[in-house]
Amino acid sequence: MSKIMRYSRDYKKKDTIITVKNVKIGGKFFAIAAGPCAVENRDQYFETAIAVKKSGANLIRGSAYKPRTSPYSFQGLGQEALTIIRDLGEELKIPTITEVMDPRDVKTTSQHADILQVGARNMQNFELLKELAKINNPIILKRGMSATIEEWLNSAEYLMTEGNENIILCERGIRTFETITRNTLDLSIIPLIKMRTHLPIIVDPSHATGNRELITPACKAAIASNSDGLIIEVHQNPEVAMSDGPQSLDIAQFSELINQIKPILEVERKIITGTTLNLSEIRHQISCVDEDIIDLLATRMSLVPSLIEFKRENQIPIYQPEREKEILTKYANLAQKYTLNPALVQKIFDLIITEMRELQKKERV
Ligand SMILES: O=C(O)C(=O)C[C@]1(C(=O)O)C=C[C@@H](O)C=C1
Image 1 (tube, protein in one colour):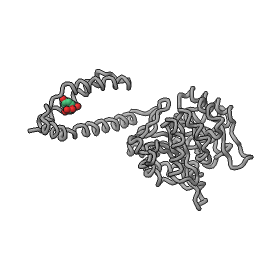
Image 2 (tube, protein in one colour; image 1 turned 30 degrees about the vertical axis):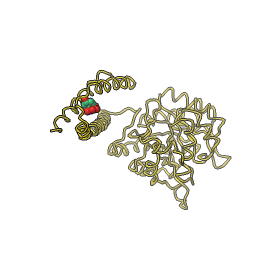
Image 3 (cartoon, helix red, strand yellow; image 1 turned 60 degrees about the vertical axis):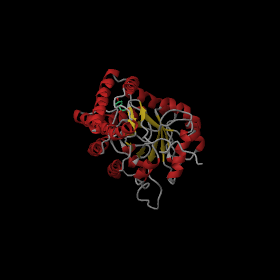
Image 4 (tube, protein in one colour; image 1 turned 180 degrees about the vertical axis):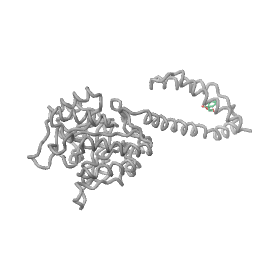
């Protein structure tokens, strides 16, 4: 018998929702990560992070260690950058993302940043993956530039072997014959990934296209393809960026991108947590939640005909006081777990159960 993989829908039906600080990722919760490719110095990182947060980003990216094709390119500030990242995360109270490349850096990096990223080049660096499996931070796993879905998901499994379910997949373009873009953004895998796994998947249009002109259309397509988030390179002055300048947006361009994608996110009923929203955005999010509540209520009520049939055949009374008492006690406890008022939850369920009872009486005749 083949083993049920932890990443698979057979292992877990419901979408995984990751909570980091006050941000949720997965299900209906959409993530917008932005920031510079690399932390170049304190001022540059802080300035960019403050600006993108104000525009609507709910996660800040920025590398301390840079995997570069050429050994002569800027390799990152290392530990100095980790300290800057930790300070920013604490000051702005926003989750930070940074890449880790060496198994020996995993522990320290996990103490300085909230989310750790495995880059495309390291997707099958199994020693790194095994070390990362030991920590509990959420991990972004980028797709290797020539990795199949099977290989990618197997790498996710490595990260999950010790129980961490907070894994975020990231499509960042694959290598094809076409060289006009840096890579080829493969959005077709998003619905496929959603069928195969409960893990969230975000899209990196910056590395996929390598061209800032292509980022906005790629983001729009990624949202329409049901991705769970975006990770975008932003630099306060891309012309002087020490890495990835041509694919980085400046702050005004990022702000314009957010203006363009917000209506699409609304249509797709996505919720962005951890950012300042205006009243109409908050009301939109409330409506999304209310619609879900109504949908779930209808599902509960749809069980009435089965209840009637079973009770009639087995001559069981409609009213089951013991069961009602059991439910109300259980939900009052559950309410406490979610820091909800238990009396409110009991009141709501009292109404729902009464309705279920009445419907059984009405529909029985
Ligand atoms: O569990 C049952 O027997 C039901 O009919 C369902 C239900 C409920 O809504 O949860 C409704 C009426 C009963 O008194 C107990 C519970």
